[in-house]
Image (cartoon, rainbow, N blue to C red):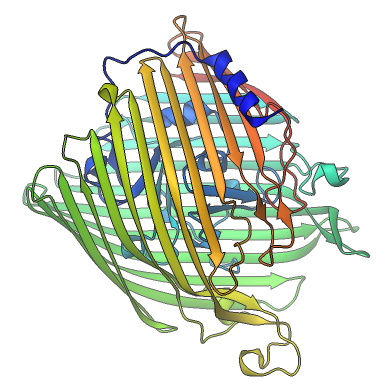
Amino acid sequence: MHNFNKLALVTALLSPALAKAEDAKSDQNTIIVTANRNDAPLSRVGQSVTVISATDIRTEQSSAVVDLLRRVPGVTVTSNGGLGTTAAVNIRGANSDQTVALIDGVKLNDPSSPSSGFNFGNLLTGNISRIEVVRGSQSVLWGSQAIGGVVNIITREPTEKLTINAQAEYGWRNTGQVVGNISGKFGPMSVSVGAGYLRSDSYSAYNETRGATERDGYKNYGGHAKFQIALSDAISIDLRGHYSNGKVDVDGFAPPSFAFGDTNETAKTEELVGYTGLNIAFFNGRFRNRFAYAYTGTKRESLDLSGMAAFKTFDGKGENQRFEYQGIVDIADVYGLTFGAETEKSSFRTSSFGGPIARAEARLSSFYAQLSASPVSGVTLTAGARYDDSKTFGGNTTFAANGIYTPNNGLTTIRASYGEGFKVPSLFQLFSDFGNTTLKPESSRGWDASITQKLVNGAIEVGATWFRRDSNNQIVFISCVAPLTGICVNRPFGTYDNALRTFAQGLEFGLMLKPVETLSVQASYSWIQSENRATGLKLARRPRQSANVSIDNIWAFGLETGATITHVGDSFDDAANRRPLEGYVLVDIRATYPITKRVSIYGRIENLFDERYETTFQYGTARRAAYVGVRLNF
């Protein structure tokens, strides 16, 4: 069915006649945490930010975080199969390992992976209350890897009153999920604790349309906990924890042909995140201090189950330990200073096919400061700098600045930002059998400018953003052939080098309609040109165009219905631009009905028109699927 016919059909089914709104809810008071590492209203944030709220998560019904992220302007997602397989998030054409992933403000990168990136494949939405996506280079505040942007996953917060949330759903290919959370305040302690379990027969990681005959199932269980202890009006302690344990069947390159296809292999991933923080405020809260220790540990294991006994083909562990200090000073009503220091120790241990164990560790120390000023009404200006020091590659300094201006109390908003980013070489790129200890950090310089306009008392909001980023010293794998000279000496199978320069530029458009209180329409379109500056070839798996439309309506008798239409354009699977990936259109529909004030049922159909597509060459994607569930809130 033609793309426009699909859109027309869904719109006709779900949308009543549009009418003029008397009033529309403003988003200027939305509080953003990630952009400034401090609570700030959106009206004082100069960067490009998208917030996926708790309402959005509940409405969309998606089980995987990546399904929500693919609807954010400038963001594309690729995966190597179904739930639990490797999933990469690219922001504005940057590499997936140039995206900083956070959970409750703690960095999630995995030092045991070749590029020290983060696999989004195990992140489920169960007890997540909010996602903030900041686009553009953000290394001044968030350090290494923040070249493309930052994704901050925020779990359910403690509540004043005892609150219980529970959810269960079942659907396509024996997929079931249960999630629960309890929160409340008990004397000086505020608590939020939750857990979840998901299992699915799923589908083959090797694309079933290419002849796959088996399903690659997935299981995941995990939980989170937050404790906030108020010792006094000025002193408090934060304790946070997150745990995830996933097991997924994968496909690979089995002998004797070593062609990609069905295999009897399993990958396990265990992730543990911990945070302990002491908060002290002085001068009636105008000088706020945070002393913290954060830990991230990732264990990965791959097993070949085709023999008489399981054979471990990979075993790895990556750890980050970070000590942090951050201070925030309200110098005056119109000036604010954020500054801090961090020291991070990263380490990894890996072994493949029972071979020797590789180990390495490195330390990175950092200092940063950012000053914000609102000299006149409607104007906020921010500028900052960061210095990072490493024994491996020396020092690195980054700068950033941004501003926001609204001449009419938020009806028109103009934003502009400049940001520098960097990414330190991973431990694997430095110290493995393929390593090169002379590597330099990857670096970037980028800017964006945007304008947002509200019309008809806020019932219509339109916006456009233009951006550009130039990246240098990007690290790529170099194949080595005899005679071995230069960086290939003692590296017969290859090594890493700072050999790539890229650029990305593009436009992001957004539209929000709220014609009546019960109906909302959100649409976005992104055009992104991302290329190798030396060859002019397109970067792999970076579609030039993507678009998304979501329509949701609440009917008079309580039923909520909605649909999301996602279009992703053509791209190439490889850097040589020889393997094309065709574009695709996905249509999802959903409904929710409240049985009582505390109980509701819901259901959705994903990929309504059974589109067949690939985000990675030869890897499978989900066919049409239906799910039903129930939510309880007490």
